Length: 371
Image (cartoon, rainbow, N blue to C red):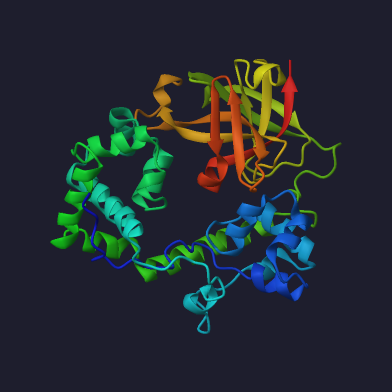
């Protein structure tokens, strides 16, 4: 089988999205290794905690507050100014010695595939995210991960690989590799890859994420709760959304009703009406759950996973024809013996590796209302 020649340069730091001071603060607090410290923040799975420390995911403000509290410091003290004159991303990443070396064949292949799909979409403007999901069955979150080379090709399931073949008009993996070989060799992919790995753009995005997180931290109380909700006696009204979409999904369609909430949820919390039994008898169809997008799911709890979008006019006739509504799946959360977090649905039976989903597509369910 032909293999992609490593003619493209892979930035070994491209997976870093959020440099921080967590490792430095952990060691200063007397924890030489991450594993012993992880016991102090059991709400955050070990694998996610590791990714936060390594800068591979952006934490929620609530998570950073938990980490800071366990370290005896303030959450804002764990943030970095990536545009400071003395800051070097290379120097910051150096302690993570187990980071994979660049230019590995499969990493180059994933990067080449990402560039090829981007070029395919640029050449055909009708290939919107929604159109790709409709024609090829590639969910938006999956397309994003493919276009950002976040997973080796072999880790995609058979259905996703077949969809990629169809999208790029090849018959199998051998022909896909041969095609990417040719595109790489003639330089067709280089400009796109350079754009994907632009260090100036990367720094700007890091800065934007840090500023956004700093703003979220300001909105947290001393205990990491939303200061708008103080104690169980103070209630606020949350808008309720929810309409059945099929395959166990719930669309974020407005219902026109509100519920009282005293769960100390974040400022973006909302109610979600199920409309059908979910998770067996544990969550009946008449339930309304309170979803907190600013709180990461925890083992033993419930969560929602954003799976894609649906046309808003399907539920709201006077909506903008171009508008879309998010769709969610409700799952029970557990962690396996290796520290990996999974979400399980029983209607239908589905298992989701939550650590593979962007954090902005996950939200904790903090309470439920029954009528």
